Image (cartoon, rainbow, N blue to C red; front, side):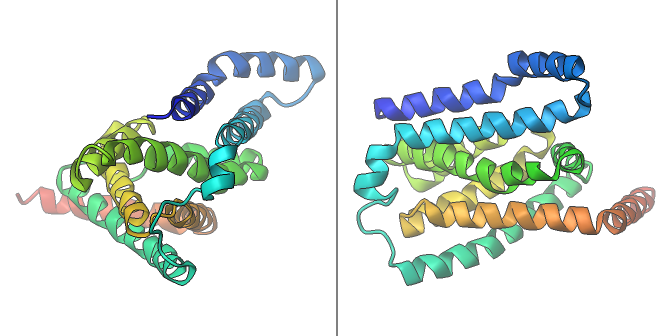
Length: 241
């Protein structure tokens, strides 16, 4: 793996743990300035992710200038657009299939990570830029372009996608939904291999995250009602088994 790639991974990990130091400082600063401390989390989220993206793009600037983040034999622009749009639907199918399997295994519906994100967006709507755009871009560069790309040079697609997807899932710190996140990782890895353009899984990932946030925000009450009804039906059926 290139030295630059290792640096990118270190920057990404440092960003993930930066809140351990930065957030307490920001909380103290906000308290001193009379600013609501509840805004510290979204402010730090926006700042840390934005800075990390800028640093990573700077590290990869030469590669971007020479290759444009594309590999030899990449799909044409037209084919890439088709796969990017198709990838959104593939991602949702993978998500639904994984969710159904998790439900059969007894995993509770709903994502704590998603609820935390929605809460942050309620506090500061500008945070949607991170959850819908900056976050997916960073994840595709790190987990698909770098980690999956490095593994794919040594192993077949299945092994490479499996390892990188599990790492991708673990990074979300929601281990009960590891199957769900891994399914998404497989889908994005497939799009990357199929088109050899990292922009394709980035587009699919950005679009999926954006739609999830919009649906969860606009239809929040309806979704909660459906979730409770689904759990009630599941418990009712379970009482006969």
